[in-house]
Image (tube, rainbow, N blue to C red; front, side):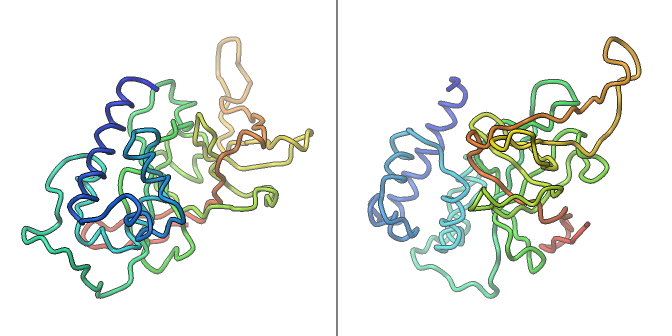
Length: 251
């Protein structure tokens, strides 16, 4: 782990520990409130052994704590810890049920444009409300790079549903595949070796000059099934209306 990642992990671990103390909870009681059977996840975060996952933030929201704690502060350290100036330990009853899912928003990726869609694995940047359109969505991701253009343009947001049984793949559909190293959106096809998946791009642009002239810029590549940590089906592309909380279906 790089020094920068270690520092970010230490900072968010400290903020979560501060939240637990503010709420008057222990690691065990806080884990119970979030629905964990064991408190190991909370201990690992506090001890900086692991970063909070999208599952942690989703549980945090479902438990009602996002009504008290400022999510921007929790994720980035910016702003105040509390959402309101008058802190209260009681959890307010929401006026309308919201479906909040974590957004993975990788805005700075090194490398060339044609391979920039392979984003490094990261923690979510914020929680977004998908409204009534994607009630079965479990996460969202901002697309990087142009390998899936024109289906999904760079900068667009796609709604995702996590696939629990990775043996069931609908070939020809678009998925987000996450390994320990990358998170990439591709159209999955059957590979010659059944222990692999063929990850294909929609963009069929070819090199116009040089030694690779005539070859695809975004070549298909194989992903070992054993290296897949999480798999998400792409439900569709969404667009937020910044003047309200509505997210519209694009396709």
